[in-house]
Image (tube, rainbow, N blue to C red; front, side, top):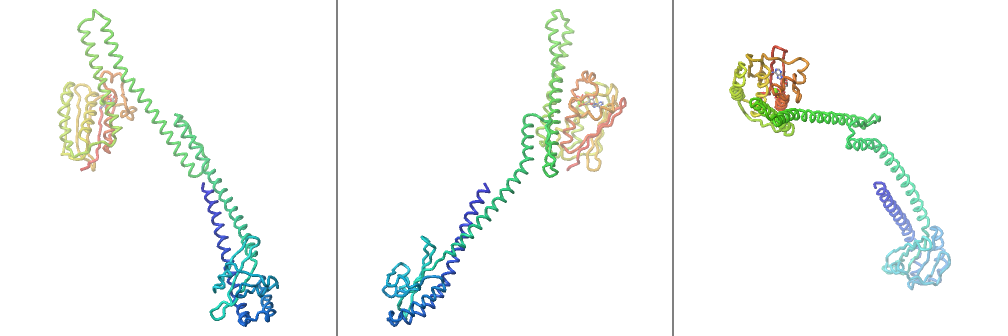
Length: 455
Ligand SMILES: Nc1ncnc2c1ncn2[C@@H]1O[C@H](COP(=O)(O)OP(=O)(O)OP(=O)(O)O)[C@@H](O)[C@H]1O
Ligand SMILES: [Mg+2]
């Protein structure tokens, strides 16, 4: 495309250049002749003015011959009746010449024409003035073949230069495109393979340039895609497993009830209670999953507003005291100061509930759970400690993972699905805060939520 534009441009440029040069050559040639003709006219004026041309024919012809030889052209002298009365080569005497330029010359104008039909010729008609009258015309027939030869020579030069230019451009263009396109081919191949689901595909480029860096970035992107994909698969497997367990319990209990016609009413009631608690469990899991999805999808939709964390903590404390009381757990609250700052009150309340319910759930009867609030430098700290069963050290890095539970058998009894802490963690990190855990097996657990103290 660019190359063909370049070719067209060069053709026009060549035509323009040779045109301009030709015009200049001709103009220059004509100016030279005009100077010469002025002096010829001067020399002939006297003879013409006498009106006795026959008498001076020899003198006239020798002037014409001299100038004609000098300028390598044929020069004729025309009288008022357009008749050739003198000639540099002694020919055409007595003939008439009345073409356009002769007419112009008799009007007092020096005129010229170019004739390129047989040979390249320039004709000039120059008036011989006496006072204000034109008393004769000098007519020059001069070959300008030399000018056309030079122009042809120039044209050939221009064509050669253009061809060389085009060839260089073509080599540069195709060479460069080949160089650039080769690595891009690997990329399009990779994109195709990845879109077909082959996340193991890697681009191999050893060019040691930007393409190499790009290929590395690309490969690390596919690696991350692969990780995300495998998380997604794990997650789906977990979710289906978690949902299947209560569902199969419900199915088993209800089928037993249907088939056992003589079932004792107390057992029947117990089965119904189990079915009810399993459906509660299903509802909780689905609700927790929806919360997690919502936090992930509407990541930025945390509604920051000025709120009082002390008031929220007091509310949560009073709401959960009865839950603690069921297990004879002493649930204490200590808040040293008013803590007014910007956070999402609903989400933070949910976080407190999730962590406090863990503390109560994983603490034996008669234990203690404490909720403490205070500020430290530029953060607000919510500390929830219990003297419960504790978390084994090897489990600590995993407790925020979805569906992670330290003791699955025990979790079944307590009804946990392993989503509470991962929701809490998500909410706190969306606030720009973090959660720290300290725990000792058999001694208890302390969880600290640090939130930025933004007012
Ligand atoms: N205070 C605690 N003491 C001991 N273990 C805890 C405590 N808090 C959390 N854990 C352990 O971390 C695991 C993950 O907690 P998380 O709150 O995410 O799940 P869950 O309580 O089992 O279920 P859910 O909260 O979804 O009902 C728990 O199963 C438990 O083993
Ligand atoms: Mg929990």
